[in-house]
Length: 113
Length: 112
Image (tube, rainbow over all chains, first blue to last red; front, side, top):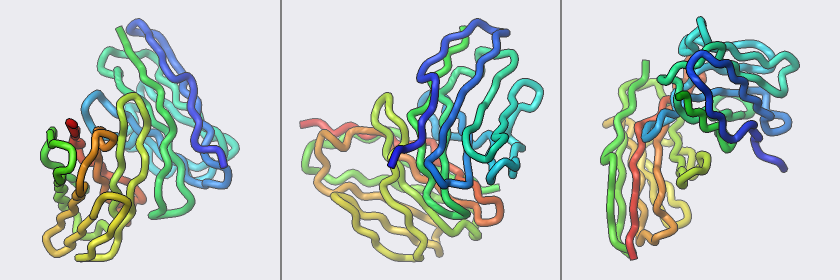
């Protein structure tokens, strides 16, 4: 069974540029999560979906970040105008139901110059 | 919300020694707990999920102890080897919001 896949693996931007990250969860997993992992820190939840619905986006910087999961499968996280403070690895994870193990993708390492 | 403190931030041991990592959490309603391993440049690999209180769970080469009374979770890598060198993260699952709160991680280095 394929794991969580993400693309791109790396991105380098100038401040003010936009970028999108794509995630394909494990087949059949109804819950999808986006995390931000700054260097040398643990992952911090940005937003999560159950099917196509946003369940919690309270940690998403809403003025510049957006996330969608229109058909309840793949998801896209977009940063509209990147800042140097956004430099981090962006991880996607999926799970089946509440309380279940979350399986992580390889991440996208973003550098904003 | 839940807060998870993980110690130590860095740990260096020799091959064959034990490596002990501890996490404390604040929310008594947290029910599930996880340990993840992250090798350099790689994603997080699930080591173990625990939810029973005060129980030792044994994995391959490691032991996990959860003490809900003290709100403490620990990971003990017994007889560590260089392949165990990685960052280790604990996480607590918030039962109300279906969210994981991670500790800041422990970078373990096992030298031959």
